[in-house]
Amino acid sequence: MGFSDLIPGVSGGTIAFITGIYRELIDTLASLNFSKLKLIKNKNFHSFWTSINGNFIFSLSLGIISSILIFSRLIAYLLKNFSVEIWSFFFGLILASVIYFIKKYSLFSKLNIILILLGAIFSYLLTLISPSEKEITLVYLFFSSMVAIIAMILPGISGGFIFILFGVYEYIIKTINDFTNKVIEFDFKSLDDILYKLIIIILGIITGLKLFSKILKWLIENHEKKTLSILMGIMIGSLPEIWPLKTYDSMINNYNLFNSILFIFIGFLMLALLELKSKKINYEKK
Image (cartoon, rainbow, N blue to C red; front, side):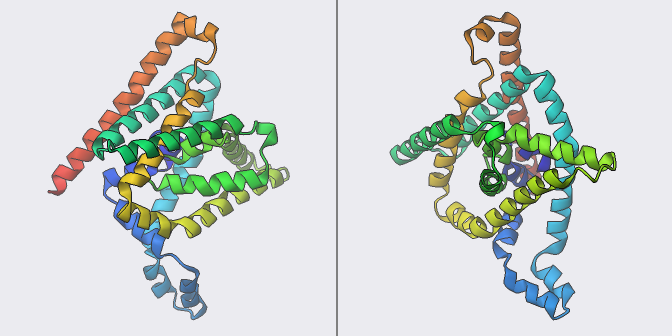
């Protein structure tokens, strides 16, 4: 799930679906509340751990954090050295995800189409006002992290995608890599600024989970198609921003164009493989 949320177009929620832990994930997050901390105060740690499904949370969190720390370096390298290829791959993944979920959930009614259009317009306008790296404030970082964590547990939309939408994707990848570099080099004196940013990101994630997990559970259970329609629209509206060949010169460059088409196809292929894996797991459960 951690690796998938670094990749726009592959949702952590989708991976949770494929591996069969999605329902447990949503139920666990929705059940978390501060009142359970009283159990620790009463020195009843075992009851507290059981009440929050501690083994599940710990294992999942450890896997997500580890994969983000490990694979953020790979993503940063690819963005720097193969920008056309990696953004084309992201473009293909997102477009394939939109087609897949619209078809899977039959989002073809008039209301769903209107919601898709509204989501697309909102998303496109948001990409127009996303700040440059120099303009990213801690408040903006907090807000984008708060929204991204919601996406991380939704099927069909990833946290990485939300960070792209808010214009902070490469900024956050760089922050994570700067942190790991300083730790590896034992350079703790210059960690302060990076730690502030990471703490703000973590606080945004915790706040998002606390505020929206129950709302999210209710929306998925009671208005699944409407919710997914808006999300698909948001993903569609982001595609012009993600498209790598934005200038005429890059479009007429045969090498760039060939690579772009190839990696868009690879993005489609990856989603198809994930869907085959999902069907295989569901078949084995039956």
